[in-house]
Image (cartoon, rainbow, N blue to C red; front, side, top):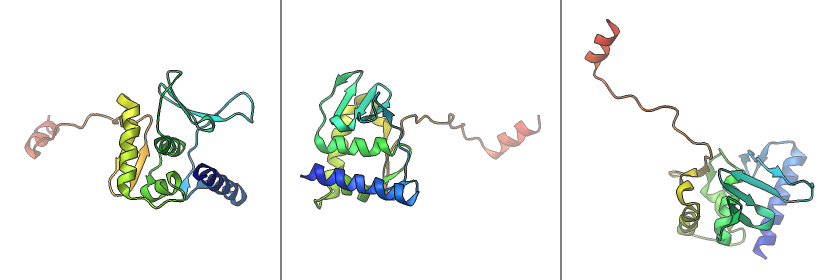
Length: 161
């Protein structure tokens, strides 16, 4: 029943978005990068690294092999992947993952830990934004190494050369 309510809420949000012409779903900028199957009626899939998420089949694949993941952790991953690159606030996550239930933040932390455990070495794809929520940062790399700090005297000597 909860899955039906979740799908209905998501469908209604998409319809509202299309009707208003806005580029938002659940109050966030939509950054969905779906790869449709051959037929338009087939489910979309999300690919990141060696992973493939197929929401309609509730399937997570690693290098083409199914990976066991819990229902709530799957919903959490689905939301974060569909909003990749955008901070998803904790309240919005709990409304999506637990649509008709009041839950404590510890439940979210538990599901996040379970999801990160499933992702293994790629657990760093999901970043925690303290006090706000989470972000799925698929291509995250530091721009460049942080330079070594120098004293003002060293900087003046280098500038005068």
